[in-house]
Amino acid sequence: MNKKILFSTAMAVVASTAFGFELWKGESEQVNTEMGNTTNTAGYWFSYSDSNDGGLSEVQWPVPTGNGYDDNSLQPIIETCGGVCGKVVLSAGSVTYDPFVGIGFNVVGETSETDDTPAAGDASAWGGICIAYSSTLQPVLELGLGDEGDQALKYDNPFNKLVKSSEGTSKDIPWADFSQAGWGVSQGGDVIDGPTAATKLVAVKFKIQAKDGSTGNFNIVQIGPYGSNCTYSVGIKNVRAAAGVKAMLSGRTLSFSGISSDASVEVINLQGRVVKKGSVKGASSLDLSAIDAGIYMVRVSGKSVDFTNKIVLK
Image (cartoon, rainbow, N blue to C red; front, side, top):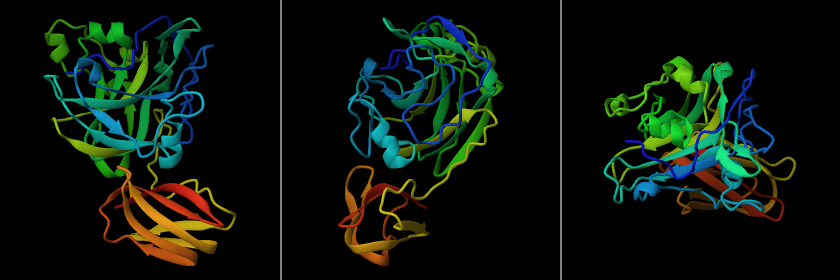
């Protein structure tokens, strides 16, 4: 069952808004929910797991987290992946339920400058949620109501089951399509439907829960209000390189142009292991046919070029 998560999300004073949040496209660590209060803490991505109950599950990030302000910031991950991506490693430890990890964001943020309890907000105007993602394990999208609200539900929170997709997919989910599994209700927990949960929403959570020992990769590239046309796009994004330098993925061939001097290229998996090396100059290419399908980082470095970015091999 879904137990108390590592990141505290106790419900507090309810805020409301008549506006929907902006479509997030994997460009920054903060989702603009348009429901934040004066603390300016709404929308920051966080990770959580089963560790509070003795689980050992984790997300292995492709690059270290942290920036100059917060050691747990996911900004380096987002810049690398064009979204929130990583490898899921599920390990039950001493828990008696299927282990889990998750990624989420709070819709309002902390209650005040002196109270870091996440506040709840009325997200009815969103109409629901759209999401674009890839995941090799089946995820769910879950509505978090904070520690107090989740406990009252016996952690049987309204959710919508997503499909697993290694190539990436998108889904538009109205509030009415979020529902409880029912096991919490059978234990005396509160009954709630998706539209009601949306009126006192604390957090939106992308959760992966599976059998002990399961592993898989995921990437959340877009999320927004219902009907905002979430689209999963693959390939190389936001290449940081000298003007005129291009990198293009066609099938299993990675091509480069505009590199004026010798440069080295490395293809790195999400565990940090180099799976392919080569050298490039001018218009050249790298054959990736021997590499398994999945998400990889491409690092190119030389006198005239220096960038790292993501590719998705099908």
